[in-house]
Image (cartoon, rainbow, N blue to C red; front, top):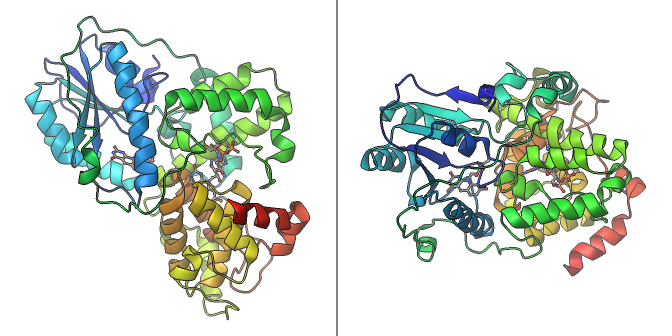
Length: 442
Ligand code: FAD
Ligand code: FO1
């Protein structure tokens, strides 16, 4: 495999013993560069997942989706004679403990730009006595290679990605079946719920089924039925014109590279492929670039200087409407379109992309301060969206509220030079009334 997908996180030398793949962001058996790399050492491979009691405001909606996907991972690995252990606790404690107990010689994990994951890895890298490798199994072009700095926007990252795509958008090798059948592992799937310190009131959803198989079905369905119309219809929240792959991508239940390969191979029109791949590759990998190179990706200090200046200049502007957490969370503002979008997210776990932009910008318009607006948008996004707690979320919110990857627009109250979106603007783009009615009936 292309070794440019791998970074070493410490400078320790390999010892004897099995290779451990600590699976975290890329929760799948197939098309997983981290697992493929773990097998390259030609030693027995053991896969672990460390379940933490809480994760960035996730609720049972997202935990249940993830855990069902992981049960499928366990089965898929066992078919290849690869043992899967579900650890419960904090990775910085549980991983070193497991390594020691199992006399492992090498640790491999998948890449993630989020702060919480980087902190776990920093601590583990110091605590263990063996080499620790990180493989970018999520991005097609490894994040640190696509660019060595925080990019200004899609227009600066796009040429860099496009130059490297021929090298990285390649087929995956097949997983090797291990020779020895693993001993039975008693993962505690049934009892682990009691260990979670999360909100159990946010209901699971049933319109999207979790797991690697379902992710592939969703992709096939999109390619067969909707890809050709994607460029024209994707911005209409009344239509199911987009792929619905974001939750699968978020939990790594499908690889973006597999999606990219299948889209390329399909018989869809060139324009449709190009427009979709722009979102899947350039926009998505730009989010990882932002979170990787901007330590303050979820706070106002991470906004570009021009945006901070203009927002501060308009800090004291009078807000026509001011809302606290409760009316926002309950979708009880004066704006029926905003309320419908909020309810779409609360009920289904997925707000349409076009509405996400409008939704976040209105939070800026209706809250006391910029800091409060950002905090509120992240809180709601991470609590209700199935695909939340993701670099795409932090970056999408920073784009909407803080001008990240955008440019200055005409100045106006509250927003300053941040791009504005209006109710009437939405009316000119799609049937607003229909959207409101449909969401209220869900
Ligand atoms: P499709 O249109 O089918 O796109 C295919 C894939 O491309 C998506 O699954 C996604 O991985 C990627 N993609 C599409 N649009 C974007 C984008 N604008 N930025 C980065 N990648 C993109 N996306 C999340 O995955 N998680 C979030 O928490 C999230 N929060 C957002 C919050 C706001 C305020 C905004 C403006 C955008 C947010 N997005 C988020 C990006 C986007 O809205 C979703 O990725 C998209 O709606 C998912 O639906 P889909 O899979 O049907 O998209
Ligand atoms: N990753 C883990 O390694 N352990 C977890 O227990 C865990 C829980 C979790 C819950 C909700 C969610 O949306 C993500 C979760 N993740 C967990 C991480 C996830 O796989 C992603 O890596 C990041 O959220 C995005 O990069």
